[in-house]
Length: 144
Image (cartoon, rainbow, N blue to C red; front, side, top):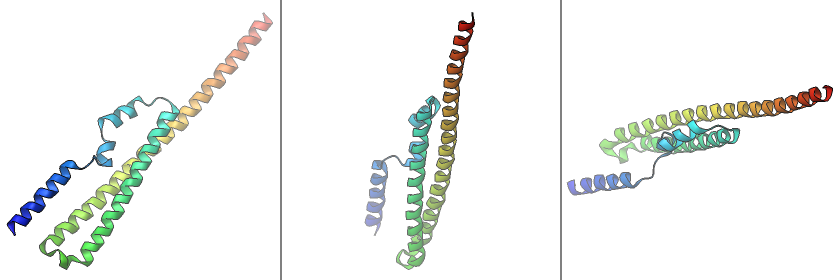
């Protein structure tokens, strides 16, 4: 019994160390923070908004998977013996974490969508202002 428990724990440890970076970790990574800080034009903000929306969708998918697992643990807790309560608690915590992370990403995406709109307005105002300035300058030059 102890050998199988040790092997299970050892296997989980190896799997955890080999796992890819989660979307939650990716959002908080240095590269993403740098990209956010360096976003200057509308297309940058559009791309960031899409990235955060995609991550939010992935988090909601993971939350749904964990919720399904939680329901399984609740229905079939007799299969897991003493570990059933721990498994239920862990699944519930993951559901909560994934929902919170999805909400954070949705807010971040909305902020970048707003920045993209503001940037587009700023760019069109800048172009209109340059055109108007050019026309005024031509008009002034023509009258001189």
